[in-house]
Length: 500
Ligand code: PA5
Image (cartoon, rainbow, N blue to C red; front, top):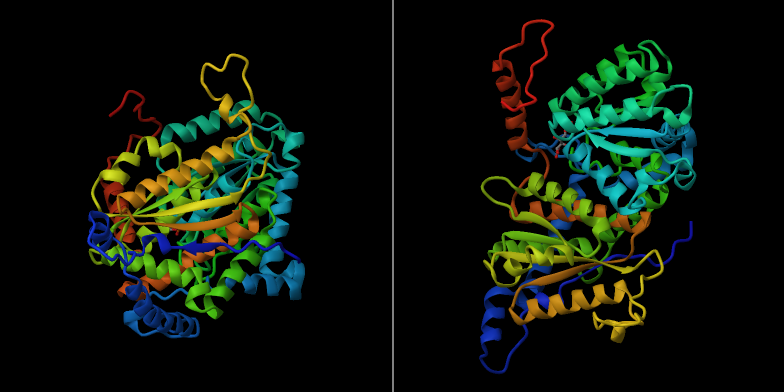
């Protein structure tokens, strides 16, 4: 497949302290808060050896206990998926996934995606970045066969789930009409996460009410995605799902690194997106990571700069997405960084902001507040639609006629430039991830770049990026705590509508 030049890049020259002939307050501040070019040069050597280590980890079949868990399967997964598809077509993992997605799209007009954390955020990020901003509100002919999408099972919000049931009950009346049918994707690698499992139980009951409890269509309209040995798999098998219809999250892919497993790809295909382009983007990023020298390697650059900055006390890592469409990519990165490197009392704290929106809320703090921040801008070069122009107004009370031949993209460019300038004047460290455009190919690159960089960063600072002992502790405590909540007498429904 021919793809235009869509490489994403990381630029960090603005956070390097500039050599200064004489002492100035700014030079002093830069010296304190920026990186020295020689620090980066020195780090290049050891980050190259860390790359060698990460590469070698891919081959380790039986890692020593201190390296466990080790789940580097995500690194080669995009290319493996593409190769498998080339060889085995429909019988490959990707082929199966595309078939299931097509089946779901052909059968229903609404899809509820259940999952939490790494089993939810990839599809949320992909949906936000690549689907129409008002996708669910579009009439069916404009959606062109792409179902409406809802996300649930990612919190314990009783009232939103009830609201969704109310919506489904009122808009989906006749299961014989495709436009009124709805389906479910339930994703849980462990298959035992309580938030998702509880939501699935309730959603399944709704689906059984709608289609009839024994209706064979249930196996078409429900798509389970889970690990090899999981309660969810057992449940689905007991419900009569054929093995092939249960999609698998490979054991060697960690829960936060699932973007290019069925967890991210099946929903993407249901949304009508080009999952092969996404995989090509991710595979291209892996190749750059493996083959390119530091100066052309955004993974190594991002990992090194962010690691050095954290060491320098910039422990709040702000991802400023200069496109609202990428906000959920930021939430996904928040979870990737927190879950992977927030261990042993260490790890930067991620924050996602949207420019220019959050300049009017967090901007002051970022400019003048605690000097604990590194700001990574996420900038998109090319917009998809024609620019919204200011144009001429007859009376010009707002004095904007002077900009009549400028549009929103020009104003955004000015906002990025002026924000960066003011940060530079205050010696606030800023770097840029640049996306030529938002497309399946660039989103594939971006997610893979951030996953790889997180692993490299973990190896740089001695933190195992895989596993999530803290979250597992809470998960276990929750089961214990729930057991302690008194049961209701049979047949009664707890009335908590007025609060506890
Ligand atoms: O980072 C992680 O591994 C977590 O965010 C998990 O994805 C999350 O806890 C959900 O787990 P599961 O997919 O097993 O339901």
